[in-house]
Length: 492
Image (tube, rainbow, N blue to C red; front, side, top):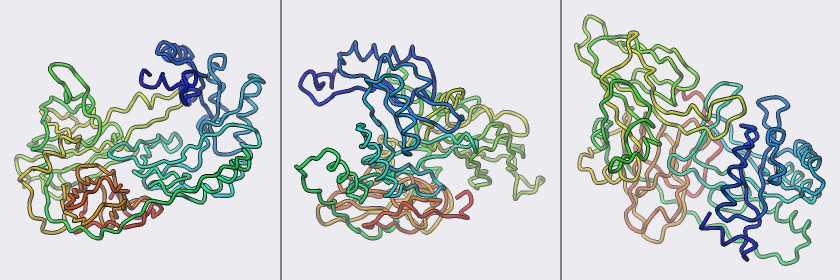
């Protein structure tokens, strides 16, 4: 607050209002929390108009965020919606609270975000334009969510909990959102419609020129030259010896001089156990979030979704009387993103520890003497990875987790581009140390946006973490693919 308090309107700056909370009424009716937040803002110098924003949610019939937050005596209530019929109901609720309240749509949803394995979301131009017209005809203020969505770089794409299907649905890397600007910031027809409608409503005569789109470049194919298997990757991270399987967040990973700065935040985590007997591996809770089980380096099962009390036969493919006395059991767990929205009466926001939480049993006995490898894949890890001398010569496609490296030469100032992950399966990509996000052949997203500033003139390093089946190359291209949903790809 100290960095923006001098930018408030009463001090000559552009900030005319400050939001206390966002859609809190969907989650709780604890106005004491909101009062605390407002007091904290005031104590830190905020003096402008306070407001909140809420809307309907469809999981509990008839429940309305505005009804759950009797905070309107402390902050202006504003509304969020996409459908104007629902919006009109919310407008009337605000007007019923006070005739003096101006109407404000804090989130007019110009599109929607995508989940892996589902159709790409769009909003028709007709629906968009008619709803915006209705908002403006109400003399309501409007903020576009999104005007420009951009990209969930790294592991920052979140998730939603589907209360109907009882399953986790994780967001794709692109936050294009079918917004007014594309993921790369380019103009769309939706932008032109909004521009025209706003100018007509405000009767603004001074209309600046529409800016040009940024140029894109097809940098062509990048051949994979080097490979690093999972067992080598494990040597580049810390190892924890525990008497059970604990979640990534509970690891003492970021302690400095005795001060705990938290456990593992993102990425993957691997649990390794040496076993001499046992056949049935049981997970008593559903995966958080995606599990692959390996025995002696061979993949035997992939678990995801709402599957609890599931058994995995880890002796598959072997005869009991010929099993070796010692085997290595590896359980690789992916954190696919945390849920960012919960509803009243649920605890989903409080149940987001990722990995295993002493919920894995071998022939009915809990796993013990566990070696845990946190694979956070942060900037420090990338430096160790890139500079490591244990890279192997790439000799062809594999179907096990590993890193793959190639180089791209650019002879002039780099432009924006899109990286096609065609014929790869699932993982994420580093471009010159920048994690440009996750990919998954399920779609609908099939390309990753690579901003020009992430590239450089000269040689560029491309490193891919592939969990399953690799390919011999990747390709940079000028166009994006966000709507190619694939079917019948199984767990891959």
